Length: 360
Image 1: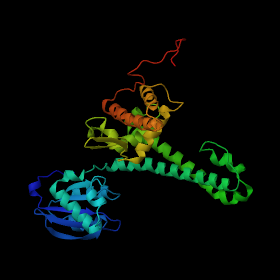
Image 2: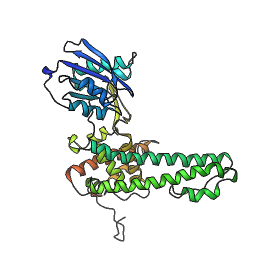
Image 3: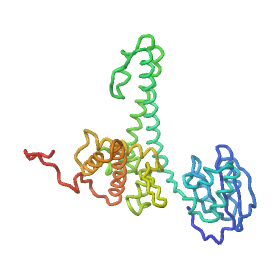
Image 4: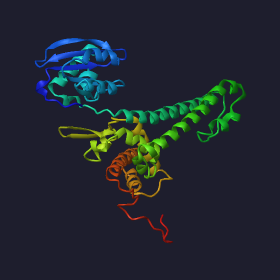
């Protein structure tokens, strides 16, 4: 965001972003509304209304359009804050929720203290462009999974059952097991599944190229067992600047892997994780955690710690251990990124040695 002295900002503007039109509200230094209206949610529409203004403080909610709009308004010299909707309950839980009222609320809160907005920091253009590759692959993978489950479900309704197999070989392995009366109906779906596999492999090659040529730090982070280039690159692009976090443990909070807590009076309750932040990276880290704790996970400090945690705490201990390992993994990756240290699987503990002298 652009930093300016607050005494030169005579106006504060709240902008409620809409798909086609966005509403705005101007309040002056005394909190009086001096102007309000709506503009087309396009670069031309915002430029016509806000480019010629004297520097203002502006507040808008985060959304699909907020990244480019923030850059546009900052380019006009304005001080722009992108509000975190999870923190601004005045809007999300308002009994009088409409675009005009939301714009006014944003303006009034930003006028009092922009820190109340818990402003977020958007990624740069290049990071967003590269992240589009990772997220496009994820969308195709989830679509392929949905279609595979669809085929299996339809076959079951006709009394059949398809054999288990790997996802890439699904179409070839199950085609002969599909009931005759369904072959014609499901053939187009199998063709789409095959096509998605081709596109996913295309994105896999792009991801390897981006990690090698543009983000070599991702290759360094991928040395951790269970992480891989995909997870490492998604982590790097989502965080973008590791210096944003003075302490590595704050990354777990940022990614929503920190437990919510209610501390009121004499009662302190530990709740589930916040699930704030980027859900895609959080899902990838949880997947890596499941591998680390699974039967094929190599012996590491992180695995030993997670397995010990999973043995206590009742029936949900395993689930909590998976999330806890994912949180520690996020902290570890950030620390490796900042320091450049080489990953040591058993840095804090000695390896288990069998009677034959071979590491177990």
